[in-house]
Length: 113
Length: 113
Image (cartoon, rainbow over all chains, first blue to last red; front, top):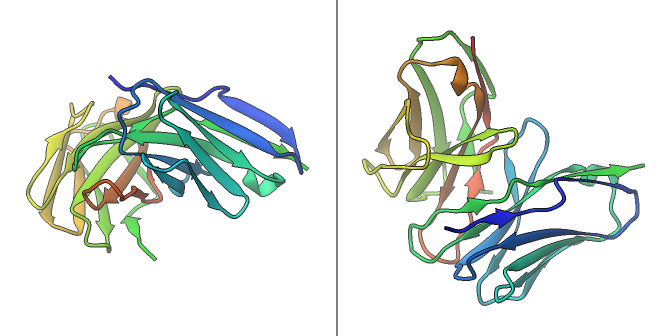
């Protein structure tokens, strides 16, 4: 059974710092991996989707990498801002047209002004 | 832009009431999902639907049912609400196939008193 782990559960950094959020998964047989952001009391917003054949995806100050063989993904946030404060979740999708996501429990990020 | 709309942001219901949570997507997606999210437990899949009138149980279907009469609408039904169903409920949709990611709604915070 696929398990997705995100450690640490919470992180506090000063504004301007470049940071890396980690995600590990136990089964390397995946279709894709998706990073989400969740603000308190809100739904999930998709940030980046990496297909199993890809190594990384970029959107603005965000860069996500995928290493299937080691079961790891990282979300890199450049020049962090207080507005980046949120919970970041990663989720992996196994093979299969109608397969379902397995989520990590998320990392709650606080960026201090 | 693609949208998944959950009809209510906040709901307060009494124990024993029948509760309907509505989710509508405007992307012509075949797959739709209902999750609940609780502190420390993460996201857990309640039910999903591959297509109209098709439904399958997720990891925690007890106490819930669903309805998918039209492609764009997926309803979650709490037949007799209980206090342990107090939670954040999230709806998502997706096109089948490897390349697609999930799109989530903004969530419904349900409190059962």
